Amino acid sequence: MAGFLDGRTALITGSTSGLGLGFARALAAEGCAIMLNGFGDTAEIETTRSGLESEFGVTVRYNGADMREPEQVVGMVEDATAQLGKVDILINNAGMQHRDPTEGFPVDKWDDMLAINLSAPFHATRAVLPQMKARDWGRIINTASTNALVASPNVVAYTATKHGILGMTKVVALETIETGVTCNAICPGTVRTNLSEHRIDTFAEEVGLPKEEALADYLAQKQPYHQPMGRFITVEEIAAAAVYLCSDAGAAMRGAAFTIDGGWTAR
Ligand code: NAD
Image 1 (cartoon, rainbow, N blue to C red):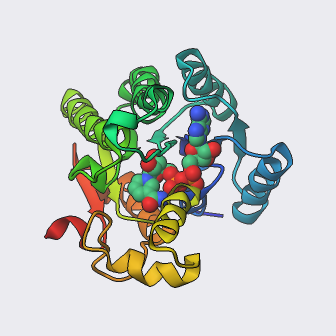
Image 2 (cartoon, protein in one colour):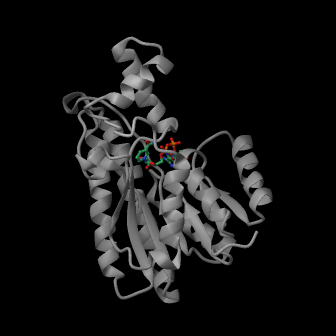
């Protein structure tokens, strides 16, 4: 399928579900070859991979690197470069969430979230920058969150890592400012994915309602997950931002927090 990303390649971490899979679909629809990454059932991942190939007529590969392991992150970049010929676009998207008050926050969850949400993007970015700079073209997109801009209670590691990745985004953007490589963060409000489903489950338990009945109350909350639009953001609405950032029109977006949150942080 012809598109403006014909001949381009993208490595997207955490793309076996949710937003990452949405990014993969949107870029593949523009002709981009894709390296998927993430956890899941082997047969389901293969169905996703081959399904994207046949739907969009692009090469799609998969690397199962664990983002908690720096050597595997670097190995994934090498594998993507070998299998796709290069990495033009890196989307650091894999992430995890855990909710607990700070004094009871499990230390192993803190360590995992630092590794997945913040260190893995550093290792992957560090590994792709030389080839992007050599070709004088590249797009690095970090999936941050509204929690990169504002805090919510009970999500200390999430908020700290998302604030951190926005800082890293700005540094990389400044270090590449005189090149054709851009680095930006996308900051979504709540999108219904595996990650947010857990949060909605917890809320339903707290208010003592069946989940589908609790949804309206969840969306209407004043704190901490206020969605002024009264609906969830869609995967497609977020993926469209990545398509824009990868286009020529996005070339002047540098170190930006591309916020798509239905008004959450506008108050
Ligand atoms: P998701 O759970 O559907 O996707 C997470 C992806 O990361 C999956 O592919 C999973 O397999 C992968 N992953 C998790 N741990 C990994 C590891 N150790 N190594 C490799 N891959 C791993 O959830 P999502 O909502 O699509 O999350 C994607 C990103 O979007 C995350 O960074 C999340 O913080 C961010 N985000 C989500 C929302 C939301 O409301 N869903 C809002 C703002 C930001």
